Amino acid sequence: MSFILVDKPRPHVTRITLNRPERMNAMAFDVMVPLKEALEEVGFDNDTRVVILTGAGDGFCSGADLEDPGYLPIFDGLTMPGIARRAMRVLDDVIKAIQDMPQPVIGAINGAAIGGGFCLAMATDIRLMSEKAYFRAAGINNGLTAAELGLSYMLPRAIGSSRAFEIMLSGRDVSAQEADRIGLVSRAVSADSLLDECYALAERISGFSQMGVEMTKQLMWAGLEASSKHAHMNYEGHAQLFVRMTTQNFEEAIRARKDNRKPVFKDGA
Image (tube, rainbow, N blue to C red):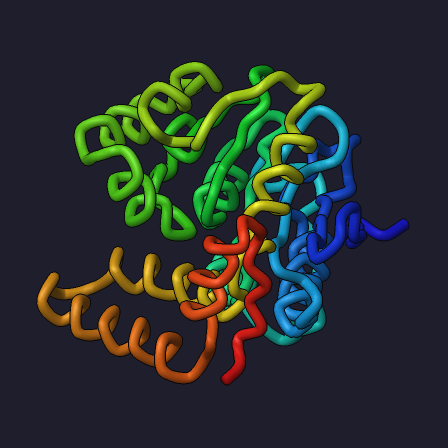
């Protein structure tokens, strides 16, 4: 059985589903390696404008698989410290793959997102959350740190440092209602409507210029990592000029507005 399912539920929308519900989609290597491969493959699918990442069953992702983490050939011949370093790189690469793919990724957080699952959710560009779901930075509860897979970088940038410190140091659950209130997710919705809400958002995004959407995602992440506003504004300006001067998108938007129709962006001259 494949632990990663890939399908196209709507035009230009690809859904990637973690498919090990009996383990709450835990981050065993036989789940994470195929996930990284799927993300990379979909990233080069030029028909895909938006990606939706979700989990099968009642959980989004429960973090480390404490029963059977799996084994990879890249571990052969290594001592335990070496295996641990290789394993961390495998998981790091999944987070990077989500943020590096051209298309925006919507996290459909259908259930518990615990530990590494919390990190996986935070790597997505937009998060919609079932009212039954919750987040937990579980490492601190297990005698470890709560800082892993970029969480201590992404979380304070999403909700501010004080709230991030409190959530990560207390190891408590963050309900969907609280996540909505503090801006950790775009919105919390009923479990029955979660995917439909994601599809509606994906359809709206996919109607815009593919180049414009992909560069906006790239610029948003670059802005979060920028060393200064001045340097980033220069980057933004050149990206905007590139699209403006190499396509007829702006002219098409004006024509469509005059004709009272939706624009058709072809991303070409």
